[in-house]
Every structure is written in structure tokens, then in C-alpha cells.
Image 1: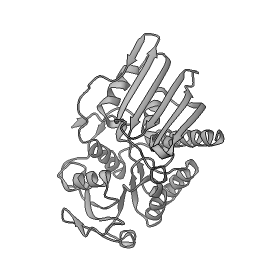
Image 2: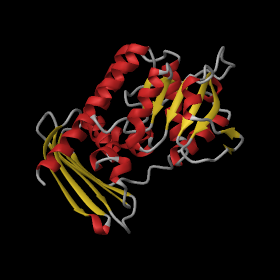
Image 3: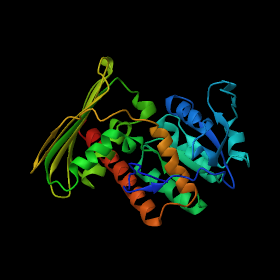
Image 4: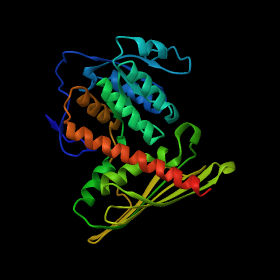
Length: 312
């Protein structure tokens, strides 16, 4: 059965086969916030990709005992256990790099929620480590599996961009835990890069009122054809989570997103992709293209951070 997933690399990809697999990969989930809880749910439910995975436990800094009959285990036991072959890193962003390094060094495959690191150089180092260890390192990008992105991808294909903008608003977010806004908002940057190709930084500003928990980051980017793109992240109390976009093409304009349906099981779709990687169903060319895009976005995020700090 063929199923079209809005993969970062495009195209169709066969789902993991539903018949009983020859082996199961033991999985531990690190961090049980929103993403971690969804991961545990998907691992416990009978899905095609879950048939290849066996949830052995979860790791949390909080003493929780068990969640839905899934046992809490220590980080040390997760790292040393022969039963654990895969780690899902779902903790806050500031801890991702350390967890990735520890699990790769322990010989485990790693799935990590974005951003994988808060440093471009560290991401490069971890990818090199994964390759040395012969392990899969997968950075989740559920924003590329959303109905909205699938709609946008169809809308922009073959069109000549003149200019564009993407504004994202949401409530406050702690930078100490989730990183500089260009990193915590890297899913929006990933949208722009996936739609319009590699980008270069023109300028960036950061307006902050920490006493009000308010911040606004404005980034001016350029496509390889020198077309301007503006990316704005605005966060503060009372701001609703929303996206506002405007893309102008030679052939017309796209202003804001129509209602294109509900995003269903996007974390499960990401798990499908991860299992396909575990089973060797991605070509080297596809994996290299995905790695290049992820590292480019992390490099841009770091350049934006440097630019904003240089202006302070």
C-alpha cells in the first residue's frame, strides 16, 4: 500500500509493512511533556510503525513511577540496558544535545524533537558521531507533515516569488529552556527553506520587554534569486497561537491560510518516517538532502542570534 506523506524530501514512501516484523526495537522516551506523552500514546497503540517498536520505559526528572502502565526508569539504566536500542528525546530544547550525545555514545538510535541542538556546530558534531556509530539520528519536523504545509507546497510549486512574509504569534516561551527565538521557532524557518530553497540573512532585530514577558524578532531573509522574505516571531501574554502569511508571485498572491483541514496523527507520521530510516528504506541521497536542510536551518538560526546580539 502506498501512502503519500508530506516528507521533507517530497514524494511517496511505503509505510512500514503491517505484518509481524522479524524484530522489535526497544524504545525509551526521555521527557514526558506534551510531545513525550503523545509519543508514548502512539507507541502503545497498534499502528504499522509501532509494530516495529517496543516501549520499554520512560525517563523523567520528576518521580512519576509509571504512566499508563509504562514504567519509569533511570537515565543510567536506559543508557546501559541492552533492551533499549532507541531513544526518543522529548525534553526541553536546552537538554537535547547532551541527551543525544549520551545515547549515541551508548550505541542507541535517536529520534529528537526539533531543534536537535541550540548550536549549528554541535549539530554537526552529533551527526558525525551518529555516522561513526552507525546509528540513525532523526530530527522531528511535524510542521512538514501538516495539511497547511502540503497546501502551501502545492501553491508555490513552479511560481516565481516576488516577496513574502510569515508572522507567528504565541504566548511567552522561556528562552533558557527552549533557546533563542530563531531556534524555538525553527519550524517556521524550516517552512520557508522547504518552500523557497536555501536562504541568506540580510538583517535581524530583537525587541524585548522581559518584565512584560514580551518579545518580537524580525528577520529579513533573501532567496538565492534575491527575493525578500520577512519572518517575524512575536510572543507575549494574551497573544494567540497563530500564523499570518503573505506570498506575492508574478502570477498572483496568497494571503493567509485557508482552512485546509485538521492535522491528524502528525507525530505518528513522523514515527513512520523514523522507522523507515531504521529499516534502511531511505536512500543515501534522500538522507543527505534532509541533513543538509536541517543543518542549513540551524546555521541560519545561529546567524540570526549572532546578528541580534551584535546589535545590543
